[in-house]
Length: 243
Image (tube, rainbow, N blue to C red; front, side):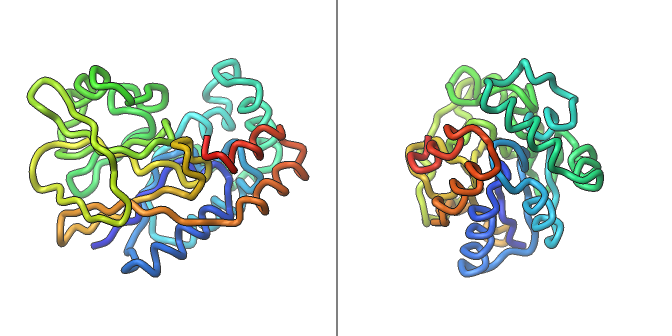
């Protein structure tokens, strides 16, 4: 079984389609696991939901998904994110809102726990420090946990009562047989690690390995859509910088 692992699509249709295309060319995949924030920020929320629905997939809710539903107050967000959430809510059909509303906060599959932010706080916490990671290893029982939210790809392995972060190399299969891991595949639709290409991972259950990949996409096309939709210009500009 090969599983495509994606997170933080953020209504970026061009990025999502490029990820699906590259994943298909890189050995293919049998199913998709998504880690939340399908919507928010970007100009194509409905189209991204519809594209996901074309595939066998499982996923969890992110904070932006919940904000669009009104399950998280917009005072939790900066002005750009709040404006995008309002716009997204106005541009989704009830069927799309129902899809988001049906997403759980946590799933378990193939000895993975999947959440949006962290197993300790599924929609709020950023796992970016050793103390945070060390504490979060206590909040899941599987061998691995998949997280998104920070838009920053990483591998983190439990080291006794502590944790150690590793760079998630691109194009190199990482064997997961030894140890417990927290893994972030990075963001499809709004990378923030200084690299503007869409970030994702593929898990191969036969080899028990995970591979990090990056997909180029038409950033200018997405930026044009953002501006034409009347969304904040900052949300378009940041895509070029991967920030």
